[in-house]
Length: 385
Image (tube, rainbow, N blue to C red; front, side, top):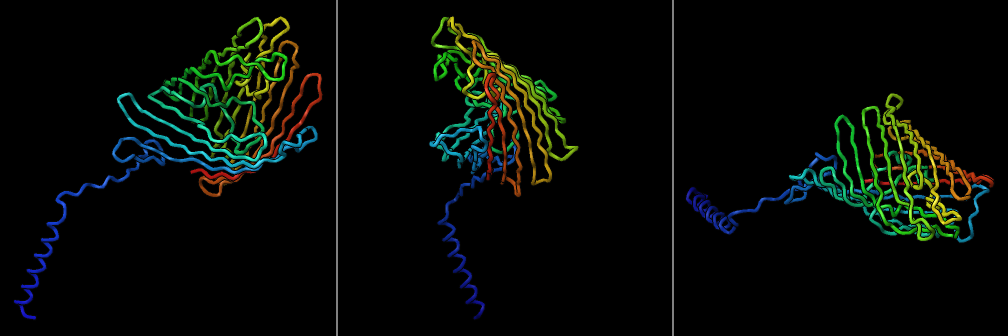
């Protein structure tokens, strides 16, 4: 091929390329890539076209629970001596900076299915709230609650206040790890009714919210906290329409990294007058009793609890927790006390994956009656993401 032929071919190629380029749009819209935002922790990214950071996570847990292990337990034929349960949580957390400060929303959707003939939770909103600066509005952990336990197993409940409630609260940081909080909370879930001498406890309805306050100190060595609540005790029968109930609690926890990284030990004590849920009493323990004159006489109770979590290795840990509840019942009802001891062995071979085995023992001691013991075993597999 001579030089003239090469020149003609090059000119033709240039003309074709120019024609194709002319067919392309003059402006190409920039790609709006997803940006990582770790200012609020791992897992947050920025929603395209906004300044809102979002994190999507959750967990799935599957467990087997075995009861009716001791002679004192009396399960009827329609009850299951063992129960299998699957529970899934979907959690969505958003953060946006604004002129009002940080605006946060949090949603925790919980889906439960279990084989227990006594029912299944089904689908519920476990938590759902909006935070604006130091204010919280919605369904969130009660401001009263301090230590709620460490064990990763479904065993007998220790006598700890651990409830999610509707609330309007404010938390203020004073500096150096010290915060104070005040909260107005719906008492519907924590109202345990009045014993009027019939099968079911009497509840007059949710007529007034609870008022809660807390002071909490977080330091490198651990934490210390004090909380209190004032409630209203109602009944729809009797001469008195209501009484005032209250509760106080104190807790302290210590980081024991000198024994093993991540080791913690916790202690908590609580006292309640007409507010049994705040000391971790079971839901069938009434807040008060209606006496023969039709007056409301509040029940009184105190509880103590403690627990230690030890890490044998970075993957293997074990924990033990125990609690004691003492109830002084009014209007002739029997006083009683209850002891709970629980322990677990927990294995985390990779991040977010948990295998746990737990055992629990509970003893009820009612004045004038024999002591009754109950036992439970639990095995759990859980994946968090």
